[in-house]
Amino acid sequence: MKRKGNIKNHVSHLLFSICLFILLSFAFCLCGCGGDKDKAKQLVISGERILISLKSDSENFTKGFTDVQKLLESQKQISSTEISARLNMMDESAKRIVSGYIKARKEFSKVLGLKGVTDYANYSELRIKGLEKLTELTEKTLNYLHFVEEIVVRQEKGEEVDPVESFTRIQQFAKAFDQLSKEVDKLAEDANDLRKEKRLF
Image (cartoon, rainbow, N blue to C red):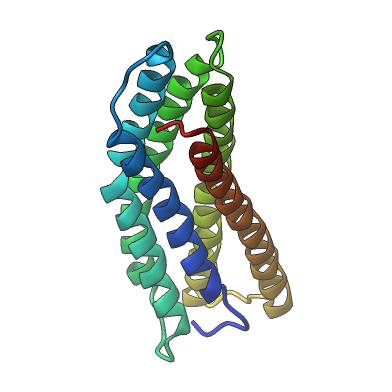
């Protein structure tokens, strides 16, 4: 399938967004706990460790995205079977990723209920917002790829596909994807800046 336009640049955004969260998680878990804010620090570390456990699924998800993108950019005719095989793998990875995001958010949310831990609470709020955006980004990525899969299937069946409508939908996905990626990156960077400024670890 050959299409007008692509979201090639957004692949790097997705990779950067996830890697930034993972790297921040590794940094946090290298620190020790101590002092009056042990509970808050332990909860945050628990949330970060959950994110670290998602590294393999996150890598598989982004690899699947990259593989499908390469297929779309190739000049050969694409079959729905080629796309479906990769999407099935991505769907399974996404389920585990989103489930992990939910668990991590619960740990960060517990920090918000503690007293006298303003800096850790602010950090946790940034991580919670970032994970909410990452969840949305993951879902929109799958929606985009399943839309492309639907177009390929329709073409294989000999059904007419409106190129203008398809291009418009793809552009809408690209715009939303780009905005979410930037928001995720900004939240991760803000969390890291707060960590350094307040010397949280």
